[in-house]
Length: 102
Length: 209
Image 1 (spheres, rainbow over the protein chains, first blue to last red):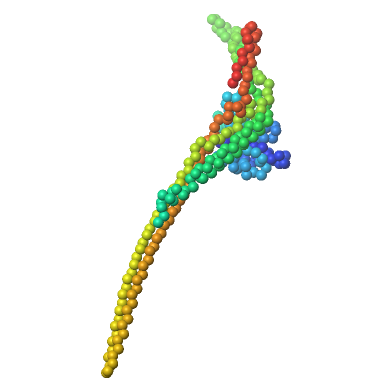
Image 2: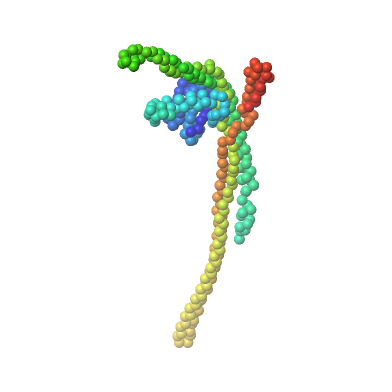
């Protein structure tokens, strides 16, 4: 799974981020984090960049990676894992017990 | 007849290499620009992170009353002290980080290998054929006092040369794009000044990472 930082277009309506998150989920993606400034960190299956760039409300898509040597990497990793697990449970891809094991 | 060597020399190889190199340079520039824009974006986005959670395990003594029998079999109550454990959680206050500081880095890609493959199939075929046909007819008649004769002949000569020459070519351009670590200068240096040794009269230590 590839990670992307996604921003809505500057002229996009306020609910654009929710629409983008839904669009990513429909294409097998996971919302790993939403920032206070309105960006999303998304995990997408291969070919996800092209899929994201096709969305009319998306203004920027940039590939990102997690550097484990940085101070907040562990906390970010945990946050990403928690958000991903909650979405997978919500979709029924994994059960709560499996989530607990992970 | 066309020269096969000439055909090979006519392949615009230098132009193909030049175009490929130009396309790669242009593509690399676009990729780097996207990565740098991502880096700028990551530097603007801020998150609050708790860097450390402490779990302090402390002894937790409790007194439990139990009924025991002495040597004569008389029951009496005794208080015994058992050791339990209590876990106390504490955490550092959340701190604000940019996503770049926290550990998200832009992905950089690089064209690592490029291949130009040109395939040519040249075939030439020459066929020549000729036909020769001769025919003659003689007709004669005679009557009293006079006679007549007619002679006719035909010659057909047909010659044909068939020449075919075909060149088929295909070219393949292949480039490999691989993710590479971000440039060292993109990540800010972390200067750590440890002033704790000052408490013991030692100079502060400075480390750069």
